[in-house]
Length: 259
Length: 340
Image (cartoon, rainbow over all chains, first blue to last red; front, side):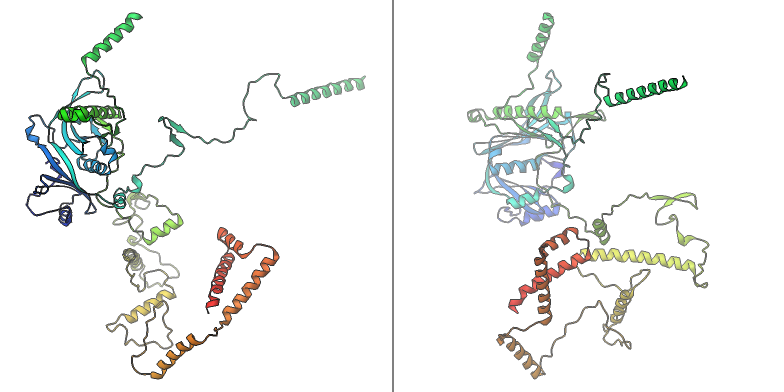
């Protein structure tokens, strides 16, 4: 039980073939109100079968059948384990997870399955567990490690890993993937959850923040420049001079009349 | 100076030799989604190594990618919560399908619909209000509310009112009616949103019931008998009720053969008769319209299509809207003509 506190185990040996008839899976999903399921079976045709799937609105969305080729259990590794409820880190390696559409969907499904509870913050020393998925040679190698943080001489610790199991080598068998339409519908985000668009702020290719500012037109008349005597407005000066002249003339005239 | 540089270099070299580095170099950049604590490494694998020593190779791969992921997480802003250092995770970038479809929006009530049309915003009002007479904070509504007019111990009888009327009872009754009205409107909102037929109401508790309200109530009252109003006697000089749907009536199955024969012949006549029937009012209207249209074109002013566009643009004058309606009707008629 890898997701112990959050999962239900159905142990009855009922005949169940999710790829032929999904109704019973949908019934169980409805019963326990769970959207993710993992189903193990063994038959001559498909030995050591593991089906991982998820449901949307109580109907099958994705389902991927994996054949287990090699298995080492959790208890076969004689190491300290992680405590319950740690939020695991997920690492996917291999080109296939980027290129192949089936692998892409499997990546998303595994992420959905193992990413744990959604949190806004995480305790730095509590990052202890790694799920590691590698796609190569048509196989998927599923490993699980414990993180050991070592001193590195800087703030960031040096990481060492210790395998704690379980470890599986898997082959993809049958798949049932949701149609693009349904998949799109299931990924629909509520309106208010989308981030609000910030106006006039953009990022360029190098990641620098650019802002656009709208200004009113600059008034050049009221611009303050350097003050100098020679730049004083001429019209005012002329008027002053005339006034002085007229005053003097008046004085002279007065004196003349008095004489 | 030289010695200082040397000593710094020496110490850093010592450090490096003491601890292993945290740096990892990859050909293609590893895609890291801190919100999910997810790292996706698209670099091609070394198949030879994978075959020969699988587990150690996978472990080394995982270590490098984890180191990259941890480096990124350690760069995030940190916070101290109860002696524990936590990193604030950003919103995850990878979209994971939902478990259930998006919840449906709450259906709008008649009032919210109206408020949206008019642009009325809800204002937040405090729960408690200051009661001036009691000199106390009291709840805005409900038990022991402020300004409760049914709790007045003395009421002045208005000049116009009947002196023997109980003013206290009147206020209580008015309050009860307002409550009942609100409840009814709530139920009607529910019924409307169920897409079912909203039941017709009798006399709603309005302050001023108008003529239509009364006639509707009368009609309902008539029908509210065990025999659905079959034996209710009509009043002398009673007009048929408005706002009431008509009931379909059918011809009797057997009986009046002549009537039936006539109906069938009428239909046959209509089909075989090649001459078009002339609808005089329609024809005159059309004639008038074409004359007006020609006048307008003759003036060299705008034609009717332009006028229509303007009516749309302004959309305020009632005359312009009427004109628009007229235009549309006429156009419809013109289309109808050749078929009739």
